[in-house]
Length: 413
Image 1 (tube, rainbow, N blue to C red):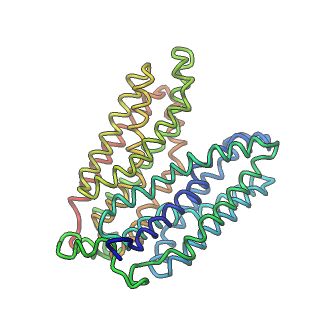
Image 2: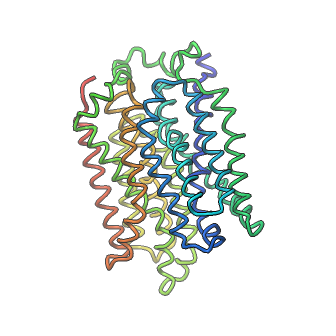
Image 3: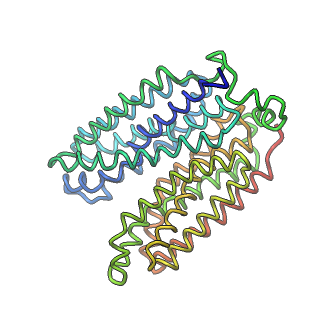
């Protein structure tokens, strides 16, 4: 059975459903609602989008609790509950009539989506696979971007269907989350291979190899959180998230050339799409590279990011090179949700992975709540977009230092 079809593949399919539906519809599709909803209520865009900051804060506060629960409770129950919360939260957004209501629903969505986006894929793949772990994590996480590509146009069409089309879009998105994801989390997901009387995928191939077997043991969270490697990985998670947020301003960067390079400004949407494509492809490629060497994955992702920044900064007049730069920056963007969990697994093993990674992910969630504001201040200052690019290069240099330090300080299992 393992040589033909292993149940781990069904787990991978479930992870794809989770990232492509609730994660993408809550996070990757959020931006299409910012303008229509704020205009409908006649409020500043920042006043409405505050709900997204509250969502990120709720994610940060939820993660350590979710990590403890997921390490003890059947994942079918936990993940299904999270899917229900996300689905009902989106439906709740469709009923909004005041900003406090949206803020409350944003908090609800943050509670539901936090375990799904940060913990579900690494926890399930680590439990079910000892082979091709990086590839499967990258493949599943790529669907957060693919889901955005699929559902952003659908949501936009629904929004444009009428004066309150945004309500329809939120409601339909909520139904899609519930109907499309619950069959997987309720009927397919199992916490560990032993629940199906199976060994993890690839266990027969690594049984004679001491390296992977040793890595699967790891150390408990209480011990991990006292190590220098833990704090280095917290720093890495926060800084790579700060760097990732530059993506949100690439379209604005292209638009800033409207007076001097109108053809570049006209392609601002394409620039953002190029970065999204780089993110999706980069997640899969990073996963494959990490299966060979975690250090190689670090160098590859950061090298792509540096090359992307330099191309966008110094050669924006050539559209092909600008798009290539945006695509390459998408690869370093992908490190946030692929390299971080694989680094945690490499340094601390899988024994108490969910508890450890949930605490490290808190830093990323907190940074997500403030990063866009930080880069906005930089861009609006005399430093402008060059200041943003310099900041990105500094972030990537710090990511290199913190990640390599964490690997060097790997504690003994």
